[in-house]
Amino acid sequence: MAKVIFEKVVKRYQSNARDTVRELSLAIDDGEFLVLVGPSGCGKSTVLRMLAGLISVTDGKISIDGKDITRLPPKDRDISMVFQNYALFPHLDVYDNVAFGLKMRGAPKNEIDDRVREAAALLGIEPLLHKKPKELSGGQSQRVAVGRAIVRRPKVFLFDEPLSNLDAKMRTQMRAEISRLHRRLKATAIYVTHDQCEAMTMADRMVVLHDGVIEQCGTPHEIYSAPRNTFVATFIGSPPMNLFAAEFTSAGGAAGLKINNLTLPLPPQLSAGGAARLETGRKYTFGIRPEHIYLAERIFPGVNACAPLACEVELAESMGNDVVLHCNSGGLAFQASLKHDFPVKSGDRINVVFALDKSHIFGENGERGI
Ligand SMILES: Nc1ncnc2c1ncn2[C@@H]1O[C@H](COP(=O)(O)OP(=O)(O)OP(=O)(O)O)[C@@H](O)[C@H]1O
Ligand SMILES: [Mg+2]
Image (cartoon, rainbow, N blue to C red; front, side):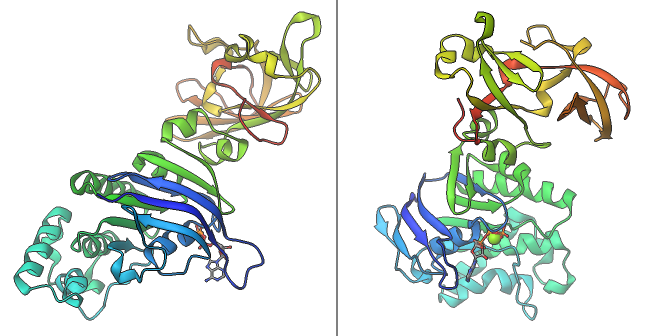
């Protein structure tokens, strides 16, 4: 059992005028894989370091299984952390690197041996046990660093961007290995990344952090399909969600959103009653993901689409399976992501439609989804 609770946790570094982490409250369930994601400098490492006890907490409380650990020394917290720069000891071989923490704690020799061999088997590093770190590839070193963390069988695992030094292929492979490992160990894990793809694929739940504040917490699907504000909407998803300034109109009895010269009928999820929450003449932000824009002639049956919009393809970027189109419709710029089975090239004129069921409406300044 290891349930981690942050209660109104604040971190202020002496040299900074404002708080780096601001009244952060969060409960992480036993056995959960929680991913903390956010732009560089938003406070992700700071949150992990406070939990590990590597830096002090300015205000608030952190507990594990009901025990207040806010001021406990790191060695008494039963936490293992894997860092981005997982510096292995260069003079020790892999075996001794993995065994190091246990030796320091004075564990009996046969127990150390059992645990190191068990971890090595789990990670597929048995053939490397007698190699020195300089003889290892990046991915192998990474496995050793994870091995060093798991032999201690801690209550909580912390990972701070452990894969960022690896190439793209190795990242994808290690990411799957860490997920599998977590399923076997069933330990509580908090994983920090600024890679949204890693976050989406690994997380049971993810927390989007911005300027030391939680913008949203939920399953990857919840965060993708119902972002709480435009920060989350544009941070998760690639290419990012298109956002347009819109005005609500009910001219002639038909409720709609006016974007430039274009009036979109109100998305169906809002037209039934929800329209009452929109005010005529007030400004909103309309959002549509690139993958929810279709070629008008290719629209799937059952998609609730707006009227076709003529636009020019300013740039077509092929991604292999998909093609990203940078479109312009009378000054309205947006990106559409289409399957690659239809030849569209830069300079073409096409007609597109927005799938209104999948659209989002936020306040004028990007606050709260409606
Ligand atoms: N020891 C420190 N003293 C003063 N300020 C610090 C210290 N460590 C971090 N900061 C500042 O706190 C903010 C958050 O830093 P943190 O390392 O937690 O960000 P991060 O989200 O992990 O970013 P990255 O994705 O780049 O690793 C940054 O503005 C950083 O400059
Ligand atoms: Mg960091």
